[in-house]
Image 1 (cartoon, rainbow, N blue to C red):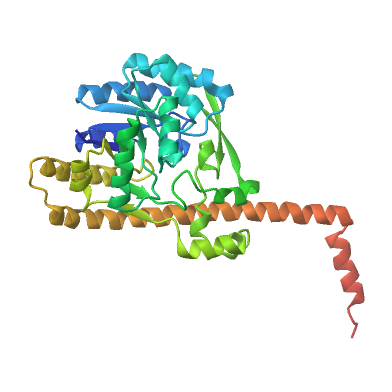
Image 2 (image 1 turned 60 degrees about the vertical axis):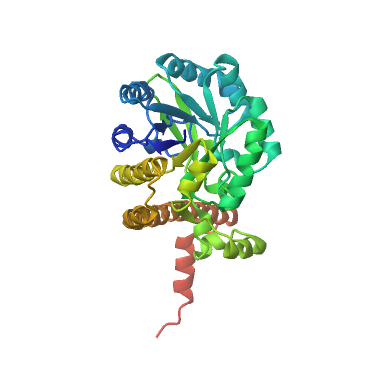
Amino acid sequence: MTELLSPGGTMEMVREALGAGADSVYVGPLGWSRREAAYELPHHQILEVIQMAHDRGARLRVALNADIEEADHAEMMRKVEAYACRGVDGFIVKTPKAMRAIHARFPEITIHASVGCNVRDRSAMERIREAGATQFVASTALSTYDRIAALKRTADEVGLGVELLIHSNRCVTGVGGCRLYDYFAPYFEEQVVHDSDGATRTKLIGNPDKGGVCYRPCLGTHIPQIAERFPAKVLTYLEKSNNEIYALLEDVPRYIALGVTTLKIQGREYPTPLIAELTKIYRRLIDQTRAGLADVVSARAALDPVLAERDRCRTAKTRQLHERLMAKVSEELHRQLVARMAATDWDPNAEESRLRRAEPTA
């Protein structure tokens, strides 16, 4: 039976998503997932929400979907064991080595291959299945029902469940497949986070794979200081294919009939009321579909104003990220100017005096 998986960026969001009808909720431990620390939960709260979900007959998944180095596996496994002992229902993981480590210790626990794996073909499926994954998030680059249906047929042959993001962003070449942020590596910012269990992690702001937010430079090509850092061929590509946000609705009944394992709502960074309303709308449509009474027209009428609010929130967040990036660019330009001044022994006070002496007198 297809499950509805909703985000839990805060304790309140977990509670509201469960109340709105989510079958499962996913959360990220501080420093270990593909979100800013503000939308991750400290260790003790994750232990609490596992029990909260179970008390409501729901499931709780933990996202360990940042790029996790092998040197960090011992610390990762301490968290995994704590959550497993509390009865966590699954882990969302990106790196195959981390999947293997978790599967070797807890072979019975569900492992989702994260959307960051960008799975879109058989070879990728076989690679993650060998690592211990039981299901995977389909690449967001697959934007039509026919492509998802073909992917589902292959997944059935490989022996994996398919998870579909019904509310997310496409990202350039699919979430996890984009490397545009590398052009802005000089402006990455380290952020040290301290968890309630004593663990310390360093996130790299600007690099989503290292647990930090992306600056979304693909949406800032109208800003000269951003555009000039991209090669011409990249700018041309971005004119044709950009980072669009979407919400699947009309095909939800078909995806349920197809046997998709999980329908997932992305959005730990959005306001809690917005996520609660999205969850309610999809919950209602899923239940109607199971009863043979799917009312897509009414669902669309309910969804459109929610999406308008989502778009407003996303635009505001993108603007904030671009301002943050431009501040980093300005800092770097200032450092370069100071370095050039030091290298040439240029003294602005001396230069001002020289110019004044050169001024014509009356």
